[in-house]
Amino acid sequence: MKERFLAYVQFEKRYSSNTVTAYQTDLGQFFDYLQLQYNITDILEVNHPVIRSWLVYLMDHQVGARSVNRKLTTLKSFYRFLIREGVVQENPMRKITSPKISKRLPVFVDRDKMEELLEKVTFEEGYPGLRNRLIVEMFYGTGMRLSELVGLKETDLDFHHGTIKVVGKRNKERLIPFSKKFELQLNTYIEEKRRLFGDTGRLFLTDRGNGIYPRMVYRIVTRYLGMVTTMEKKSPHVLRHSFATHMLDNGAELNAVKELLGHASLSATQVYTHNTIEKLKRIYKQAHPKA
Image (cartoon, rainbow, N blue to C red):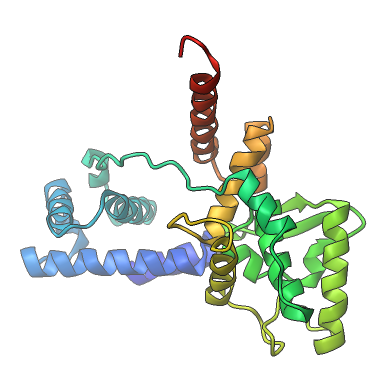
């Protein structure tokens, strides 16, 4: 049943390859535990005390609450599939409580640091500099994910309407607008890229004309963020966090930011409002005589 479930989430639900791999890993660990601890090979023998014992085992082995909750999400999806297929009649996951996760505010770069990066930092000459600057500006200007940027094609750009088509999680498409200034940067970059490598289709290429890859993009972003900030965490996702936080700071509607980020639910976007509230608290303490 495990293989059928993985095929189901891959081909029918159209989950990303990363999600399918995570599901495969989680279920593999779960079934290994069942066999080693209880000698169980039949899913019908599994009940909620057995599942709960697995959670205790994971936490005893220093697996964090976020990782445990992700594994629980895998099991919940798996059991929904089993019920749908008529393999089991009752869902033992209904009696399982997820461990609480301490809320962590998204890490973002201050606006003045982003201005310093985009206005004062000198990027390399030629194609590498044009590409690297465009990558940084695209993350900060659109809030897209690393995997989304890596997968961009020239045909995803609509210069007439000023939008970029992005394929996000679960292959869900969304459109993100871009400014006239950014359009000029795109055209300058594409012109140089075509001069060097011809019409390749892929938007971002390496110095040798191959498709860009996640680790390279990560290194580019980390390198340039390191020029303006000493913060420990530096990544493409930090630029995504910065995009969302600065949008909300400037009065953008929460639902609009949700759509731009490609979040499935509003709760995923609301975490960024905490940064805005913290900023208001600091301003209040600095400015109010009774603070």
